[in-house]
Image (tube, rainbow, N blue to C red; front, side):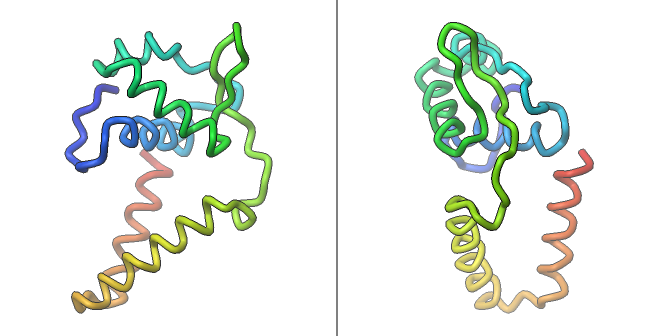
Length: 125
C-alpha cells in the first residue's frame, strides 16, 4: 500500500483516499483497527506527521475513530449520505468539474461512461 500515486495530491490526501477506497472495496470493515501512526508511516514510507494529518482528516469526516490507549478504528456508517455536509461539499466540487467538462465539449454520454466505470471500478476492485 505504498504511496506511489501520480495524482498530484498531497501525500496525506492520498492516504485519506486510499483508506476510503479500502472501505468501499470491503478490504476495511467497520470495527477494523488501523495501524498506529508510526506503523502506518513505516508501511507507507511517510513522515508520521503526514499520517497524523490524514488520520485527523479521516476522524473529522467521521470515517475513523480513535480510542485513546486502544487504537484507531473504522467507524460504522451512521448517517444517510444525503444529509452529510461532506456530501454537499463534494456535490459542489462535482458541479464545478462538470462545468469544466461541458466547456471542453465532452459529450454527456462519454461523461456518464467515465462516471460509471470509475464508480463501479471502485466497488469491484
